Figure (cartoon, rainbow, N blue to C red):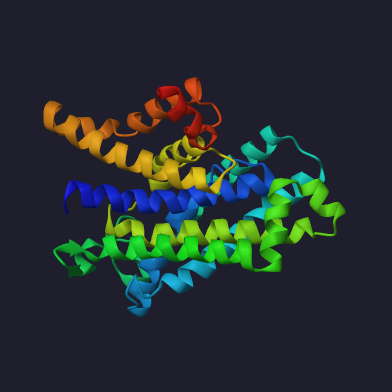
Length: 303
C-alpha cells in the first residue's frame, strides 16, 4: 500500500467518523466521546460475523451498519435522553458519553474474550488485510472506502433535500425550538441522528481493520483525530466534517511518514501530535473552523 493510497483510505474513514460526531452534535449539542468505541464496535461485529458465520467483512457491512445504528439509539435512550429531560448541562452530558465510552470498552473486552472461547482462538487483536482484494494495482479497501463515502454523502443529500423528514431534520438541526413550534417532532429527529451516527461509525469500523490492526483500545486512539477533524472543519457543519476529515487524515498520514523517514520509526508513536497541532493552530486563528472562512473576501484581499 502506497503512502498516498493509505492516506486517502484513512481520510475516507475519518470523514465518516467526523460526520458521525457532527450529526449528533448538531442535533443534541453533545460532543460524543464514545465515537471511537462506536467504530471499534463495528470492527468487532465484522470480525464476529467472519469467524462465526464465514461472512466476508465486506459482505457483512449492511448488518454492521444497522446494528451500529441500534448502538447509537441505545446510547441516546440509555445515557443522554434521561439527562436531557433533567436539563443537564452540556458538561454533564459530555462526562456521560465519556463514562459510556468506558462501559463500551469493558463490553468489547468481554465480547472479545467470549468470542475467543467460542472460536477457540485469539480474538482481542485482529486485522483484515490478508482478506482484501487487489484491483488496478491497489487494495480493495481504497475503492470500498471511497464508494462508502460517495454513497453516504449521496444518501444524506437525498435525505436532506428530497424528503419531508429530511427537511424536518435540517430544521431541527438549525433551530430545534423553532422547529418544534412549527410542528416538527424534534425527538424523532434526535433518535434518527443517533442512528445515523452509530451506523456511519460502525461502517468505518468495519473497514478500519483493512487499514490497521484493531484492539479494544483503538477507539481511544482514533478519538483524537475524530475530534480534531470535526473541530478543524467546523463542529456544526457536515461540510466542515468532510473538509476537516480529509485535512487531518492526509496530514496525519503524510507528515508522520516523512518524519519517520528523517527520525526513524519511533516517530510513529507520536502520530497523534499532528492533528493536535493542527487543531491548536485552527482554534487560535479560525475558532469556528474552515467553513467559517470567507474565501471570496480572502481572494479579493489578495488582489
